[in-house]
Amino acid sequence: MQYRYLKIELFVSGLFFLLCILLNGCTIPPEPPVVTPETALVRLAPEKLPFFEDDMNYNGLAYSILQSLEYLKRLPPDRSFSFGKDRFNTLHMIESLEFFLDFIHDKPSPEALRKFLSDHYRVYGSVGNPSPGHVLFTGYYEPVLQGRYKPGPIYKTPVYGRPDDLVSIDLSKFSAEFKGKKIIGRYTGRTIVPYHDRKTIATSGVLLKTSKPLVWIKDPIDLFFLQIQGSGKVCMENGDALYLHYHTTNGHPYRSIGKLLIRENKISKDEMSMQKIREYLKSHPDEMQEIFNYNPSYVFFKYEKKGPLGSLNVKLSPKRSIATDKRLFPKSALAFIKTQKPLIDENGKLKNWSDFSRFVLNQDTGGAIRGPGRADLFFGGGTDAEIGAGHMQHAGSLYFLILEPDKLSS
Image (cartoon, rainbow, N blue to C red; front, top):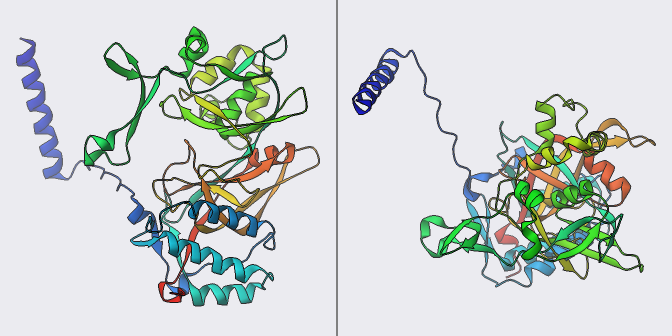
């Protein structure tokens, strides 16, 4: 009987759907186009080039370029990099950066810079999202924490390394249709199931048998922000600096607690910042874990001898390194950004916004940085960097540059 009613319901639904189409009474929203490396960037005509100017007068840019070159020189010479529909190999990338590095040595004027780029480089603009060319810029920083190797009355929050039972499976090895896809889970008997989410990890103690804490810190809020930033420096009791770097996640999707707090009217959209989130959590400790659990993603760390490191395993440069979607944009490439930066007063409060443009290097990625309409600017370490990164949230434009093929030396 239930099957008969189901058939009737399906017939009625199908008939209504057909009538909607025939009578133009209903519109079927089109599926948004899937953005690929070939469609994420569009080459700009000469008359469409942005007004090139570097607000930091090239300071720190050479060092950041050298970090990208360090990464590129570890790769096979024929590795391919996508700039929209065009592709360039490792050797082309290296010469492109070296040529630009030589030019900026004497800090050229804006006029000389624009002529140089117009004569020698191709420029590609991000298609952005949701509107054409619209890129949301946020900021991140290197947290500096106090820690100990053993737990104590104050140091009660563990920072975990990769659990022994966590497995990562490259699905592309099973079928070409899964290229670039992987899953993270754990074995249970002969089956692989999703790894524990944040709530389970926080409430059940499941990591006690599978992962050793790398270090113990004071505050669970600090741990949460450390996981969002992806790396940090821990100052130890003996004066040593311990660098922690992203190792892997539990495979669950990242969900923003900032958006949750806005939606629940706990922090207004205009006031939203990392500082406001921290302030709210500290004043509402009874809500803290429930808010954390809204984000099921959980990050595991590893030790590093230096830091902070980006996803290319090179040191990030304050205000010169950006994180983008690694699936869409060319790693290590020279980029140019135009957006606004927060101006902070002596009390650490947002005072105003100021237009700026700057050359940066694409040296990192992040779980929340997805699609052609997102980019994250690295602010460095310390209190000022935390304040600046915490307020950075503004729309702008993102461009990538590569040396014209006919300008190559060979």
